[in-house]
Length: 228
Figure 1 (cartoon, rainbow, N blue to C red):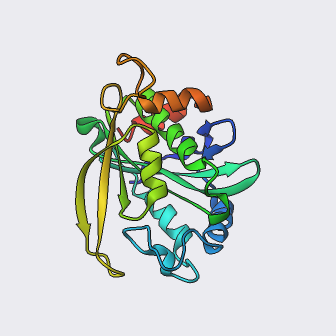
Figure 2: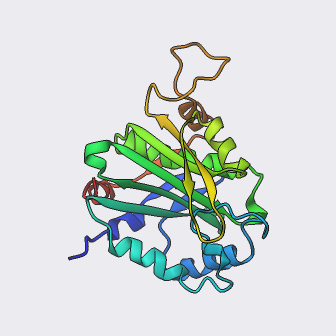
């Protein structure tokens, strides 16, 4: 029996410029149009799964629906749409496997091309790190970026991640190397060089700058907790 995650539709992560929330069916179509307008140059594939190669993105909505239907305590994918004002801009994901045991989460994201190079990537990842570390008591966050995806690697660097591993991906498009970066809740993040050794992790400094806030009611916390 599928877990009822309806309360998650009331979850809001807000920063000064962005709002992250679970999109309804009609909004998924708007986000599909953002993706169809372009995410990356045609000569470079930044994803381990080359889903943008589909010229119609026919399975876009079905993919997100399947993630919700398969939500379980052992495996959950919180795929939050990112909005600036009333305009959809992309997605920010927070995912975990065996969270109760590992206290570890992963992140992934994309932005439409015309919304890139504005600092949104740092802002939206900071928002889900706030949810993970402060709201869900996660201890480790990981992010993977294919070699050449400098935008993703720079976001990780700004937020204090350290490269912890590298692996090969044998995707159909072409083999590639993925750099895995990790960031700890309290002690695992790189400190800013201008701050004392006892200062907060880098992601907390960024969170303070963007004044990220988690707006959630108790039913939503219970819905997330059901997966943890």
